[in-house]
Length: 390
Length: 212
Figure 1: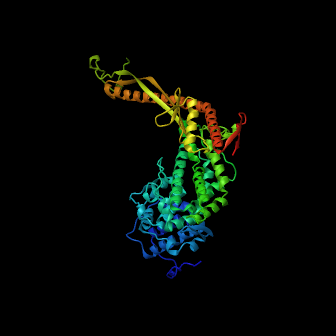
Figure 2: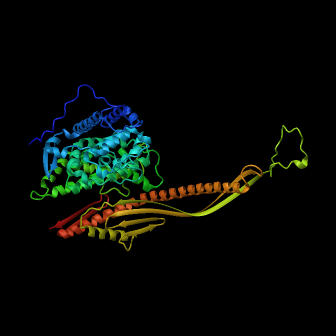
């Protein structure tokens, strides 16, 4: 294993703290908040406040912004999974090691472009929740590092509903693949659950970012699934579930087309974390309040949407069947071996069976078959079982 | 009709009866509106049958089609099997195993609304604008009443569907079981000579002895 070439040495640090204006000071604090190094309450207050915009930024401030972006984003990736000694596909061959061992430097280098700086200046100068000047960035012009940054910015601000409403209308966030992968329920507006094209996500720096984010994504989805049982509003559950299903299904199809099933590991691990035992749909829908929409079709649709994550196991099961059919002399043998190892490690067969059972409990007209006791057939469609708050 | 009087408390000179032309008159308008609408409500569920792949899909589809025909389903031009049970329609696509159960109900509903309004001939809105305003309010009242009727009809359709699903579930299970049994028998015949077939209706078990 060869180590990539060392990056160029950094210029020496000046003596004492650098002088920056009030605007630049705020901008730096906002940036630190967005990359997770500044208290959220203070950061959100700064984002909601406006400061008069200067003609330009001082070289000292620009240096500090570059430094914060570089260190903040890299630190985030390293902490959330890049440090792990794991195996991922490189040219269809499983390659072990930490991210910086597996991926050459030129592929994993983060290049931030103009839209990031423009966003930071805009977010400092304007009240983001009530901005007078417009700002947006064309998604096609964004680099992988830009997308990562905008996702981090979205994630840091989404706890504030006003900011969330403003940001998710901007293309830089609305069409951001990382936003859709991490929190589709927040980025989708209304009933429109059309995710962006994920095809580019499996190449170059974006693929390296996805490798680094696998444990983080698995953790987030597991947490999100566990709190779903507390959602009381039927319409909200339906919106969230639909967007989750659309995002995950589009992602899995793109991963399969790109031959990077290893990058969908987080979906398998999320299901494995959930299905350590048998689960009924109440785990997801138990918090729904009242009898829900008048139409049975809408109630059923909401409940099906709530189980968006277990429903992805059918795709992963199909991948497993394909992997089992790949022979030693076939193309993609090593990739299929890696997938089978992941499947085994997650106890895929049992997880898939449990996920299928949970999904089928919701389906109407599924009666007892072959001596299966009627009580195991689950609640009637569109109704929450006895004992659940809904 | 009631009359309103204006009283001048500070007027030092009492007015003569013939000069009292500034007296305002109140009037009441009663407007009635009625409307008849044809309301429709529907509900449907869609699900997949659990058909095991014992035989090739087209053979399984044929078996399913035959079994459904025995139970009163009619084949449509597009290959789907449909049965109407009153307001309910059950549609099965034998190729994909998709089942759609639809409940539809419709009713012609008449509704009436009435409103009163009081106006003055010298102050406030004119009689015409008052009448228009009351008409708008009546229209809103009627819309609300029709909305309630629509909701009632919707509940009726959903209740019908739920009830029918409970009745339909055992029948669909029987269909699936029968198709599975027939498919197993055919498969056994393809494998060799069938020596013995024994079925236990209670447990749903089927034993086929085949000589290969």
